[in-house]
Image 1 (cartoon, rainbow, N blue to C red):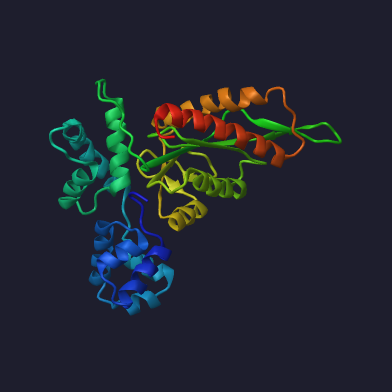
Image 2 (image 1 turned 180 degrees about the vertical axis):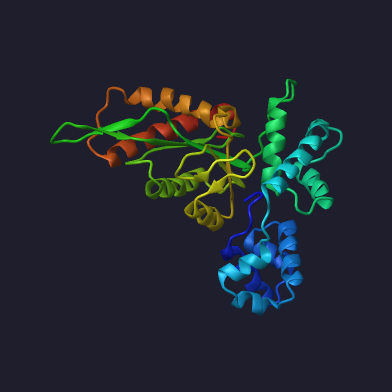
Length: 310
């Protein structure tokens, strides 16, 4: 994840591959860790004065002390202040069609003079936010597979308990790919993490791949500490993202415009799914899910026909 220290699991995996005499290119391909981040950590390993085997044998605490020197809040503020002075120029270069420059190139140039600067996805996040906030005609650009936006719909669906006729509210997960607007909707028995994670697995399977980044709001199932600069994610979400080799991102607090695509998709779900269920009754979650999937498929079929990708 951008601007977040690698986990012990990732660090030990790098050390193990170095002990096996793998090249940096091989480690990059195997772990998905960006080559500049990898280079940074290899420099930390060598600066410790210990061999890779000696580092691997250390406890998690001792290893963390060596490779993760404490960073003050002042350092974080200074990094953001420094990047802020560059955002106008970066956005202008990105908007110049004749320059053929990409965010990847801009980030690599930014990091050359700032080895401790933001990593790629956080760099892109702040650059995207700057572009969106400008009163210009530059449209928000979305690239295929770059980001998946996730959220819970404000309104729930429900099932009816057969014996008591009690209504059981079902929170609804909504995920969307901004570039194509292809989306996924699933009602859950609860919004707790143990139900959210399997639903996200099914969302990725339905969408047919894993995006480079996943953007959520500051829901407590995902974020343990909200921050404008460096949000902290739950350990479960960190491991989940590592498993899928993707990056977690969080919006700023009370800033729905940070994820306008999923906000719009929620309204599509209301129109295309909720509206068609208003006179239907379900006595089991499975029956509700099956019906929602049917309506979801129909909605995406229409969407892809309009998009020209069906």
